[in-house]
Image (spheres, rainbow, N blue to C red):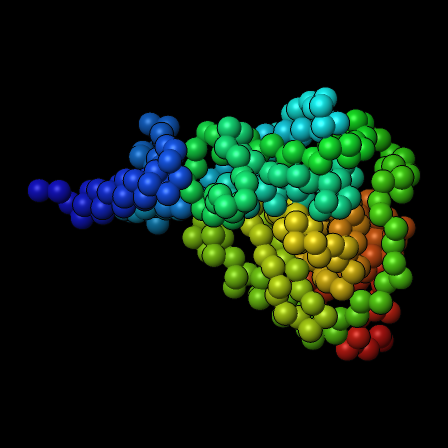
Length: 343
């Protein structure tokens, strides 16, 4: 007789097969609903576009028992760019990033926008998965993201409109954005000044009592993190502390790219009246993305790096770090945070 765990696994596999059949009927193409697992950790099966289930041995003290655990999916995403004149087009692979599947089109658009390759939504003609075309009347990017993970959905191609000027030097992630590149902070800031959009005066204000509540509001909305514990979160808030948008990913820079990319595709950038909250630390790269998105304030649950603080001061971005329910540090822009008394 099958034990309860085996019956549950069979039920989940039947549900995956049913979803696969439904996807075929809607799209006319095959999908790959189940990823093969390394034999060393037992069978894995997909529970959605962002998670896998696996059997684990949970040890407490001197005893153990078998349970099912949720894992955040990590897969490579290749971003390709097609550009040129109407009669002379070329496609180049410009980046490969390890990410959590889902919101892939937002991720690609956000990456290109925050790297200075595109500046306006009109620059983008269409965004497709490799081999699949997204056209009017077909599935939207968001409904395509909901399909089960398949190899064709690990490559995204961004087609630019004809004659959009492309800086070939920006087609690959700029070398000065990595903390291990060995180049000095002064040169990094100089490079940023050459590519960032014009900055408006920073008038964004936030009350300290609202700031204290933001991490819990972000955390309460991180559904995949609740089940896996393995994802970074990035959220957009207004000055009243309302959570307007959230993205999760195994890579903190991917979460921010997805978030800013979704706003870019909706034609809501620059984000001059929004706060970006990071579930981890604030690095140079994340402040660069905030700068490119026009954000006036960044708050991080973790620590900022020295170069992140330099960017905040250079471009007048209010920067908060170590944000908890009863404390935070202000690294720049203290005059734009109200509700506390200096002693």
